[in-house]
Amino acid sequence: MVTINRANLRASHQLPWFLLDLLMLGLLLLNLALLVFDSVYSFIAVQNLLAQHAPVITQYYQPVHENFIFYDLLFVTVFLAEFLLRWGYAVKSNSYARWYFYPFIHWYDLVGCIPVGSLRFLRILRVISILYRLHKYNIIDVTRNRLFQFANFYYEAFMEELSDKIALKILSGIQLEISRGAPLLDRVKNDILYPRRDLLTGWLSNRIAETAQQGYVPNRGALTRYIESRVDIALQDNLEISRLRYVPVVGGTIKDTLEDAIGDIVARVIHQILDDLATSSNHGFIEDIVQVLLPEPGNPDDQHATNEALIALINEIIEAVKAQIRIKHWRAEL
Image (cartoon, rainbow, N blue to C red; front, side, top):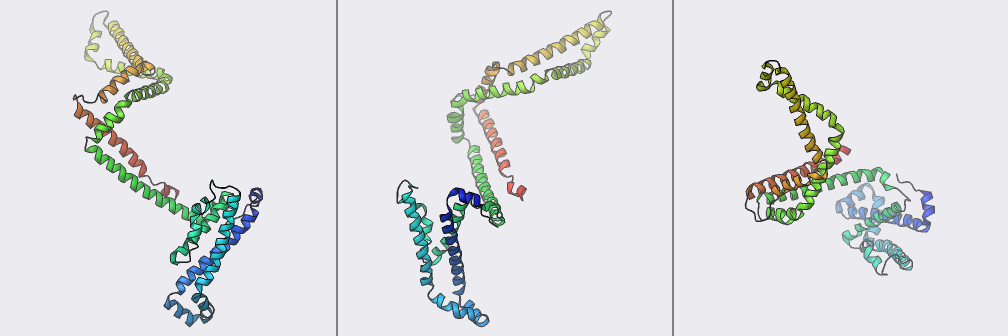
């Protein structure tokens, strides 16, 4: 059920046009109903069936059927008059940049007025345009209508399925082209990735620094305790370190001192590495890694291995995208 928002109707100052829309909507629905009925009535079997079981309908409608074009032209006259009225108003109010734009923009109003065959059924586009216009001014809200929600749900489901199939087909084609290697792979590497190597290095450097700051700095103490505990366990399992305690007099002291020193050294080294990664000083390290992954074009060293690694990387990215596309959101809504 579509309700009319009277407050928005008064605020929009569109009452005359709203009444005209209601009149045209009623005429359009009546005309479409006559078109459907006349199309069905055109079958001889239907005429015979009505003549046998409902002769009154045949008696009154047979003259209408024989002169249907005349009656349809009456509707067309009203539709054209309404079209010319709106065209004149659009010209007067300068709704469009040129006066002749209106019939091109509202082409469906003119095409639906052609009283020939299936073109008549394009008049349903006028119904849709009227409902859309009223919805645009918030005079009615078609989205709350159950029929609209039902149709829109399956429309969105159909479009999602269709777009997913197309996207998967395209991505699979990209994977096939990439697996063939050159020249596409060389173009991706040399023309796209390599010119942006500095940008890629800077982005990776910043991301690693942010990750290290957010993950390492707040948990520095916990990481220190974890490292010390793991070093203690490793030293206790080490046979050579364990033998130190058998040294007379100072064996135990040497063993404990050595364990503390090793634990402190390991913790300091790891903390220094993470501290460096958490600052801009990691840029050189990241740059070296990127240079290994993206060597200069024409360098034959490890060219095959680099290509294989790049193919694997791109394929993994595409597979992740395809996995996300395969998720059916409309099923979750259903």
